[in-house]
Image 1 (cartoon, rainbow, N blue to C red):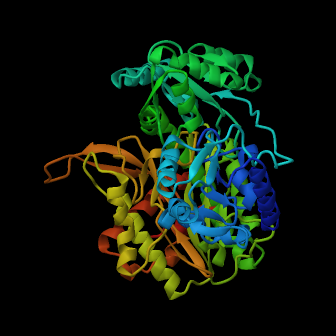
Image 2: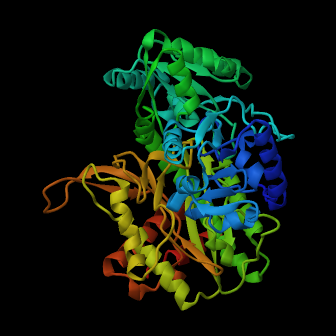
Image 3: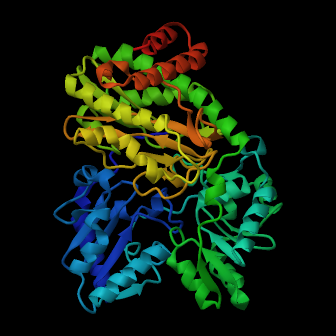
Length: 604
């Protein structure tokens, strides 16, 4: 099994570790220190040796920051983790705060004092992040101190070693383009921007560019590495050579030079020589890299990671792979949902048993490489915890007349999947059906949206929320995120969210997952993945418009639908979607599973 269910957070250590960190800071003459949930690559996925925030506080979420001062400490998390943080963290030691509103910057402005020495590890903070810190320091009179090493590492006695996951080749039959072709395009982008080089820090960008995959972090096939890419000439990949077989080394050396990560500083110095202009993404590049380049005589300029957009726009090979992966995955999910309907009424199914069963059905395909994240298997009130992770301590039985939320995904060599279904266990009450239907209306609004080129995810996010808003309800997470091609299940730059500013383009894949969460009772989320389709003419219209193709194929629980709340068009969409699920998944099922699917997709 790819998922474990051990309790990984222990708030009982928080106070003692906080005390030890403060002692270490005092020894260094420092008044405070910032601990982000980040590693040197500034990505969402970090290996165990870089889980500093979790080790210090107990918080295991994917986004957060702790600020430790002499007499106060706080942990900042976003809306997905407001319940989780209080369960995992000693709140007497760390005051839970919202990451954005009012945010860590407001907290620091209130708690810092003149001449306070606030330290940070420049390898773990982005260029943009340090710029915000500098403004706070200027406003408060505090002094920022970039440390040469990390004070927390000095007190982390059993810190794991960095990972050495083997690297594999992502064959062109799945990727669709050669590394040489991609390099030529990215170098053309740099030339057009009048940059001499760029530094790639995101492992998924490097994996996409060089057609490689790895296994350095859980659930996502990433090879932790850096790359220095000149506008002309061969790039340099900085990766531990112990991860490379002879075949993989030969594949990479066709287009790039390989050096050890210990030579990163010298490689940056060489790239910066003769006042070279180095383009850096301020949102994903550490301040240490910028400082090193500037010290070596180079000039840094801001610019997006040039791999982000072309990686997000899937080519025809990747799109075909995504469709195949979703068909395969849909059959596995349908087998699971049929099993759940048979077994849950017996009272023997709990959250862990359900998650294991789902992983087992995916494994039965014979093509499962990994799950794409820890399955969110939430029964009753646990479903209201947006990023709930079931453990042996929190495991709940799927009780009669309750809701069960399961958010899961798979990694196949031809595609990455992510699907959420909310299932009625027994008979749902009127509130459950009403809230589910409001969420479904928002989901349908996204699935059926048509929009002109240039429209961003932020502009259509409102469609998913509107039915909930009219009932005085909302959800505190984005409506959708980008999806990689056998890469990250969370991929930018596109997203459907209030903050989504990147235009949606044909070939992008985004999730469509509005939700509603009643604390202490139940959670509801409906998620399909959507492929942005090329613009098409609208009958009687004046311009071609983009639209979505739904990739995910699994029934939506119609027992939870209050049909009276649906418009005729919404009901038609639901029936047409279910007819498609039956037509495409039905031939892949047999016996009781196929009979279940026929009933589950019956028209409403």
